[in-house]
Amino acid sequence: MYIFLFLIFIVLLIFGTDHFIKSKRYHGPVSDHFDGSHFLNIKDSTHQERRGSVLRWMLSREKNVWETRSVQQTKPKTIVLDDELTATFINHATVLIQTEGVNIITDPIYSERASPFSFIGPKRYAEPGVAFDDLPKIDAVLISHNHYDHLDIPTLKRLVARDNPRIVVPLGNKDFLKTHGITNVVEIDWWESNTLSDATSLVSVPAQHFSARALSDRNGTLWSGYVIRTPHGNIYFAGDTGYGPFVDQIAERFPNGFRLGLLPIGAFKPESLMGEVHISPYEAFTMQERLDIADVLAIHFGTFKLADDKQDEPTSRVKELVTGLPETKRFLVLPNGDSMQVRP
Image 1 (cartoon, one colour):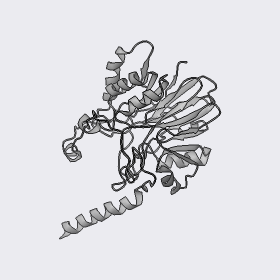
Image 2 (cartoon, rainbow, N blue to C red):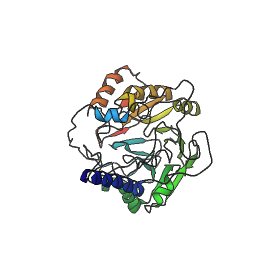
Image 3 (cartoon, rainbow, N blue to C red):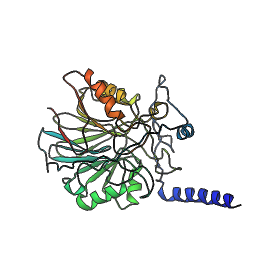
Image 4 (tube, one colour):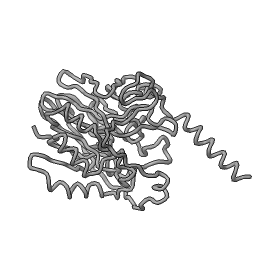
């Protein structure tokens, strides 16, 4: 009897919590990636989904231990002008991009856990490489999707209170942020653009992923990558993505390639399950070649344990692959807080 009541309590707790943390589903016209209720990934006739059983994975996960790593925090420049381009890796998918007098930050997260709760969920194993108070004034925030490790409400609230930056989000996320008092938000669909400054603009581009804040809101809001257009070369932020037909679409729309690319390398194992939504280091190199990216900065590794990768496995794979790059290209893995000066 007591076990039965306990199970009922757990079910009620889960569904009650779901109601409070879920995001509202987007309502808008049907498109090639929205069926009126759910957003969809781009597929073609040759695309084979890599599906695995989540339950089977949870019951047979590879056991590997991560350790907390010390970080030497740094302080970025206040501003970077003209054709100079500086990218500072802060942590996870959080990068400070400085060029043309504009400071842009991607998927900022300073919370201790990527979770709706402070006491459970993926915890951080490395501190941000730039203290929050040492961030320069942020002009724009790019949010790729609504997962907790990419859309962190406490961090966004701190940025809004300090700088009130423009926050750019995929379809469906504006209403969710509004419920948290965040209103300086621009919501755009794939291939739509937005002006950031006199010298820079932004284009939302497809990614292959999914969205969810709870159990009942899966794919109710869109996910995306972004292209930042500047007079001195384009910048590509992939967000969180698997490898798919969208890569060719981006290559066709931006045939001159990219000066800088921010590409994820972690949370890729087991590939039978994760490969549909997270590229592997090998696929990141393939993406660099297909999109003709001169300089790549690796993201999405080393901060939160989200899959079965060993702590240093993504970076070790990159070290093996980078030896095959031509001299005209770079693929860098930086410690939290380090900056790269991107070549002209």
